Amino acid sequence: MFESDQETFEIETLAIRAGQARTHEQEHSDPIFATSSYVFGSAAEAAARFSGKTSGNIYSRFTNPTVRAFEQRLAALEGGERCIAVASGMAAIASVGFGLLKAGDHVICSRAVFGNTVMLFQNYFSKFGVEVSFVDLTDYDAWRDSIRDSTRFLFVETPSNPLTEIVDIARLAEIAHQRDVLLVVDNCFCTPALQRPLALGADIVVHSATKYLDGQGRCIGGAVVGGQALLDKEIYPYLRTGGPTMSPFNAWVFLKGLETLSLRMRAHSENALALAQWLEQQSWVEQVYYPGLPSHPQYGLALRQQVSGGGIVSFRVRGGQEQAWRIIDATKMLSITANLGDAKTTITHPATTTHGRLSDQDREKAGIGAGLVRVAVGLEHIADIKRDLARSF
Ligand SMILES: *Cc1c(COP(=O)(O)O)cnc(C)c1O
Image 1: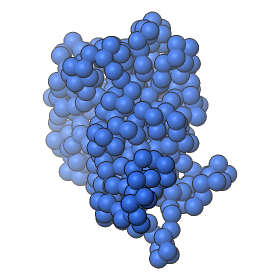
Image 2 (image 1 turned 120 degrees about the horizontal axis):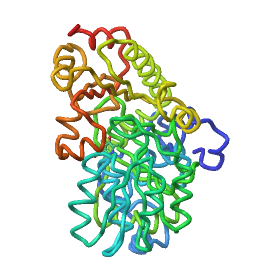
Image 3 (image 1 turned 180 degrees about the vertical axis):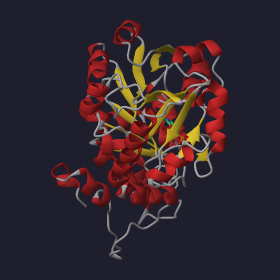
């Protein structure tokens, strides 16, 4: 359904309609295909499917109708030709690595990415002879100067976690493409409802579906989105043989999540902006980091590149760790957890949790001080979120 004229539909419509292939049962909602394998009409048909001469379901490690519906819907939202769903956000990043890299290759990664992404490149791909360099997200000269003949891709998250720095995706894509290097963007924080990296020149988008695509903190999943030829050649064979498969049940939950993605992202952004504006007026707050605030150093770029600021707000309090912990511990409603992208607001002290494994020096370099607090703003009423944050005063 829909595939031939996807481009004429708006994202809110695609999120609800794209990807569903109704069966002969004429079901209105997407079914869950809980089956590991499929039956062939004959030995010849089985042979044709396995060899790739004809298309169709073979085995749910790499072909499942519910998972495919999710893939087609997310591809439509990101404006990509192809999506490959996988078991987690980390499996998405690992699949890009396993698919694209060989010994002797080089990757350049933003310093400000998810901690496990750093570990994956630094501790695991390095074992297979892949070299990785880390650069500051917004230092374009460093990106350009770090590219070698062996560089395969650049890897970024924008906005960054937790300081919400933004990189100009189009500018970075140009730097990459001048040297025949791919640009990979982790679009977890914005989702396609707020930012579409492929349209700005990125080659591959990766997702942790666990976060906003689900939106209610239920399932773990991930996805890789990009051009058909690139993904069919480099990523799909890894899914088929490596097996980081998304379950049909999780795909169904994510399909339901996507239907409300635009509405939710708008509401997360509205709540987050209101909270950021309120925090800026509090005497106990030294600095607020939020791309939707005019005080954000890249406010102009944020306005151009994103529909709105997204759901993540960070702020630095006076009084360092002691004061930061006091605010966190005084909350009664907010969940003290490092997760994000949930209807429930969560609160984190990055310096001692998500970024606790960094050395003091690296943490200093990353700008993640002891007084920093990160809030992943949920969908509760904004008045209740503010009151909960102000309980210790
Ligand atoms: C959570 C997260 C990941 C990893 O996703 P999982 O689904 O937890 O494996 C990757 N990137 C970003 C930005 C994340 O927030």
